Structures are given as C-alpha cells and as structure tokens.
Image (cartoon, rainbow, N blue to C red):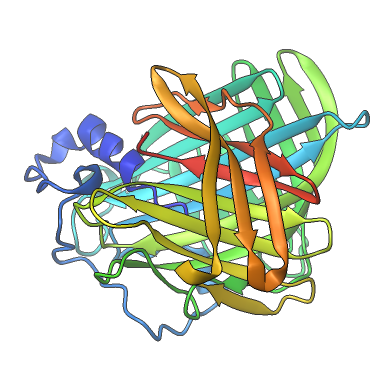
Length: 355
C-alpha cells in the first residue's frame, strides 16, 4: 500500500510555507478531504511503461519505495528501506527553477536484530537536487539514488540502490526478469469503501546483492527485494486513523501484499494481492484475509503490534509474523514503525502508522 499521506503532512508543514498555501482542511493526516484541481484516480487506466516509472505531474502525491530482506554470509538478517516521495503543492504544470512548487522527501533505513537507523532528507523541485525520470529511469535525492544500471536490457530489470547517513550505508544491485504486478483492479487500488484510491504497481521479484555498512562494519548481503510505485491525489477519509501494510516473500515462490486501513468507526478496510510462483494474481478481499495482532511492544511511549497472526484460508496460508527488531521505529518528522519481519516459510516487511 505505502500510502505516505502521514509523512507528506510533515513535508507540507515544514517546507511549504514559502508558497503560502491555504491551510489544509481537517482530515486524515492533515491533507484535506478534497483533491481540488489535481488529476483524479479512476478505474480503467491503461498503464504505459516505461513512462509510468517516471513522475506524474498532474497528481498530488507519489512515491518510489524499495524494501529488501537481506542476510550476510553467516545468515544474520538485515532490512533495508529506500523511499522517495514527490508532493505537488499546487495543481498545474511544473515551473522552471525555484518557481517549481514540488517538494521531494527521502527516507532511508537499515535494520538488524539489535539496531535500527533511519534518515530523512528534503529538497525543493526544479533545481536538480531531487527528482525522477522515466528514460533512463532514475530517482534521486542528493546522493541517495535508485536507477537503472548502464547497459540494462530495460527499466527495472537491473538497478542500483544507494543511500547512507551517519551510522549506515548501502550499495545494492537489484535484478529481475519477471513482469510487474498491477495491484488491486488492474492497478486501481481502493483504500476505502467511499472511493479513495491510488494507482499502484509493484515489482516483488527483485533479488538484491551488495554491500551494507553498519556502524563502520561492512557486510556482504543478499536476499529478496520489493518495489512499490503509487500515485494519487485523493486523501484518505477523516474516519481512517492509520494502516498496517505487509509485503511477504514465501519460500515456495509465492508473494503476498496486503493492508488494512483502521477506522474510528466500523471495521478496518482490508485487501491484498496473492501472487503465485508463476506470477498469476488474485485480488483478496476482507472475507479472504484474517489478520490479528498478537503481541505489542512499547516504543517512544506507544504500544505497537509487532507479532501478527495472518491467515488466507483459500491459499492454505496460516503464519505468525514477528519483527526482526521490535524497536524498528522511524523517528522522522511524522514517526511510524517499519521493518523486516520473518515467519516459518518466508520473510517480508511491515509498515504501521497511526499508533
């Protein structure tokens, strides 16, 4: 899912004052209840690649998001996250130079069983400090980059992922020859029963390999990685309080993405995508998924569930996920929990907001 509205609320508060935008209407994450003059997310979009790997200027929010579940030669687990967000403060065409009203935000993190480090960077659009392009594909903020390697057969088949800040640094090569996955209804991903939605596709078949430096020690690591791409102009509803998002790599070759959006009134909105080992897709709905928090940990004065029961009876899946590091708290402008998880039969990533 990776709906980063909450994080974007922070970027608006911190850096949009130079444009003197109107105060946002009251709603989830402070983004307002209307999409205004921005482009709308509607069913039936025909995705076009490589163009859709690049930015979508008519939409309000967008992100490129990578996670990787890695191990070193001794089998020690690590998690890596890299995210670039684009936020348009105004609808309409981009302006050159400092007249550009786009704000870019980067998050990078590394997690081990005993350590978790997160970093955050901001940039103004139009001056080259941050951005994204479709051909050749590249997304960057300062020296944090996610880009197609020279000589690659096509975009998103052979990538380089780099980030670092103080306690950590990573340089990973990501490769895949498998097709992309359109989430939801052919890429139209609902977030509520009231019509909120995003365009959403993934590349869950990446294999990552490279170096990871943590507190001055270098590890050679490898493992599965996952890319999510989403863009939208529609905030969530004022009734929605946060979300729990999973991306799972199963040892039998299947993959699973699912999320639940918690609500003040009524049950959560729950959906997902089952991807079998041959790449065939099945959209999962509330009645197909049983997701129950089991144990919580206290961090930064909050109780956060870090052990979950997850069942998809129609796929004979019955697992209990546990955090590699329960203290994987992203202490950024608007904090949230995000880190690697493991279970009997696979590994994955979990993001939780609103706790």
